[in-house]
Every structure is written in C-alpha cells, then in structure tokens.
Image 1 (cartoon, rainbow, N blue to C red):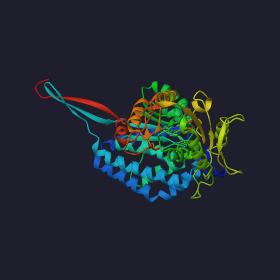
Image 2 (image 1 turned 135 degrees about the vertical axis):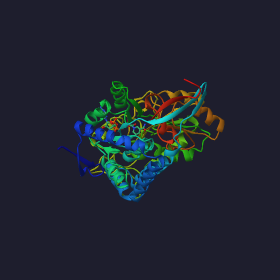
Image 3 (image 1 turned 135 degrees about the horizontal axis):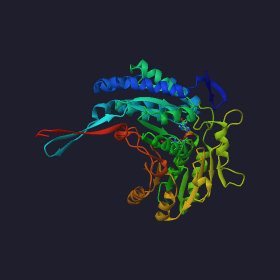
Image 4 (image 1 turned 60 degrees about the horizontal axis):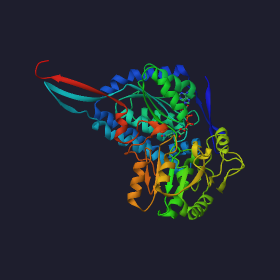
Length: 455
Ligand code: NAD
C-alpha cells in the first residue's frame, strides 16, 4: 500500500506516514456513505442534534492536541491554530442547533395544501485545501451532517492529519459508522473519482480557481450539485480620512496571517494618496516587528510556507527589480521560510496585483478619491473579501455596496464568523458557507401538493 509522507514545513522533517487512498478506496468510502444514509436520514432531528453536540464536546476536549497537530502540519502559529480549532467546535455546535430549525413552507394554492420540504441530498463529496485544513472541513461537514447527508471527505495530501483525527473523534462521539468517511489522497486520483462518482450527489470544494473550474466541468457529466470556494485578490481600501494608524497596524495581519496563504488575504492594499507616507511609515514599523519563526513558539505571529515548491512560486512575485518597500525578517536554515514583504508603489495592472500570490507579499496601490477606489477594487477576476477604512459612514456604505465581493468589513479586517454567510462573487466561487444559508446548500427543495377538495 502506498503512503503519504506528511512533512512539517518548519523543519522539513517527516512528521507522519499516512496510508494513501486510491480510486478504489474512494469507491469503498462512497459505498459505506451510501449504506449509512437511510438510517442517518431517518434519525429524529433531536437525536441527530445530540450527536453533533457530542462531537462538538469531543472536539473541545481535544482542543490542544488538535491545535498542536494543525500548527505543526500546516506551519501556522499555535495561537492561530487554537483559534481555528475553537472555531471547528463552535461550527459543530452552531449546526447542531440548526438541525431542528431546517424547515419548509406552506404555500396557498387552490383545491388543497402545498408544502415544501428540505430533503437531504445523499452522499456529499468534499474536497478541501491545505491552508486551513480542519476549519474549512468543518464548514462543510457540520452543515451537511445537520441536514442529514453522509460524507466522503478528501483532505489535501499535504495536511491530512486533523481530518483523519476528526473521523476517529466522530466515531468515538457516537456518529454511526459510514456517516463520515475520510480518504486522504491525491486530488488528481481521489478528488477526481469523487467528482465523477455516480453515487455522489454533490461536491463541496474549497481550493484554487483553476482546480475549481475543472471540478465544475467534471461534475457536469452527472449533473452534480457543486459549491465552490475559490481564490481571491482582495482590496484593503484605506481613505485619507480613516484612522490611518489603526488601518496600517492591522493591514499586515490581513495579508500575512497564515503566511499569506489565505483566500481572504487583503493583498492589494489601496491607500488614498494624501495618507500614503503616514500609512507606509506605520506599516513598516509593524511589519519589521513581526516575529516569524517556530509555529509552536507562543510569540510567533507568522510561520513558514507550506512547501519548497510553493516558496518558489511566491518568490517569483519578488524578482530582483521588484519595488520592495518593506521586508520583515525570517529565520534561515531548514524550513520553508519567506519574509513578510511589501511592494510599493504597485500598479493594479502589475502581476503582483492581479494574481493570487498566496504568500506573504502585499502590493500597495495608491489611488485618488472614491470613484477610482471602486474602479480599482473591482478590476480583478476575483471577489471574495475586502475592507474599507474611513470615518465617513455614508462613504463606507456607498463603497460597500459598490465593491463586487462576497464578504466586506468596514474599519476592520475580519472575514469569517460561524453565524454569517461566507463566499465569493465572480471567479472566487459559487454558493455560500456558514450561517443559515449553508444548510440550504446541502438540501434539495421538495414540493408536495395534497389535494383536499377532490383531485
Ligand atoms: P488546490 O486547488 O490545489 O487543491 C484543493 C483540493 O483539491 C486539494 O484537496 C487537492 O488535492 C484537490 N484537487 C487537486 N486537483 C484536483 C482534481 N483534478 N480533481 C479533484 N480534486 C483535486 O488548492 P490548494 O493549493 O490546496 O489551496 C489553495 C487555494 O485554495 C487558493 O487558491 C485559495 O485561495 C483557495 N482557498 C479558498 C478558500 C475559500 O473559502 N474561498 C479558502 C481556502 C483556500
């Protein structure tokens, strides 16, 4: 049997060997999920809710263990990993509460009663990336289970460890056999098999826009439902009337969090010209003070990149003649390190402003006035997140309405809350995760007419 050697990016050492699933393992997992579906669907909502609460409790009990595993495998600072694993448990708790609130409608019609039901879809295939391994899996698994589906989850081959733990924790918490199945393996084999499998009703995917487009094409063959959470190139728009100090102190974490390997990274920092010098001065101080290093050190704010190959890609955005305005520090020696880097000034037409770098490289783009801010913010194929910094409330709301993006913050760089919808416009995806909307994406609407006055 082949295995996946799981590498710790901070040390380049193998931290685990995992059995690698092949297409036949995916088929077997789909069969188990299909067999488990009727009983899971028939279970009373209160009992299903109780099991999801039990799973949330078990995840809370294992919080530190899972946080350390995620920090080591994905190379993320332990404080961030703790936040993510906390969100995983919160997500299961939120959807445990949603089980009994998934309702249909009654619709007034002539001659009878018309009602709708939200029915589970069956077996859901899930394909997840390496940057936020367990938290992104939980955004899919929790609502899909709450809506009474069964699951085959394919985590990224680089970071499969916490998803494998999730399957064990779920079984120990009482989830019936076959309801949640994890198949770690290569996307081109296991992911593709899931996409093509006739017994899989839907694919819920998070990853790059390029792979997402291939999944949408592949799913068309069996008319599978598809939701896609894809790439981004979000704008952090700072007007001169904003609290410049606060905007500049926060901006590095909106790009360099998770070493910039964040679909929500506000990697286009757009600054209104009159504020540019003050902004860059505060930005420089903050970036140069960032501690990059061992993910398990409590004081670390940025870890390594995920792999040597990815570091090469990121480096290609900082050629020798790049306008490097600020460069932070990074350890030498083993580990896939890359220093937080700010390019300034950058035109919105430059490669660094157009492509998703997915690393700690930010582009500062000067602008003049509201109209240009809207034009530049929207001049991208993506539309995932973004921020607007201004003390003028009406301008903030005008901007928020005008920017074509799924998730926006005003005077903040936060993107994600379990109770609010998350997802992208344009090539950043389709469908929404989190919040009440997500459960609807894991159900089909059924309409039933009951004739009360003859047929
Ligand atoms: P990726 O697209 O390379 O891989 C994502 C998943 O797809 C992995 O599990 C991979 O094995 C699988 N895969 C690869 N080829 C496949 C194929 N042919 N068929 C089926 N599955 C296949 O992405 P990545 O490098 O793991 O993650 C980074 C990307 O994910 C970035 O573009 C980032 O913006 C995006 N992302 C988006 C969100 C979001 O919510 N919008 C969140 C995190 C990451």
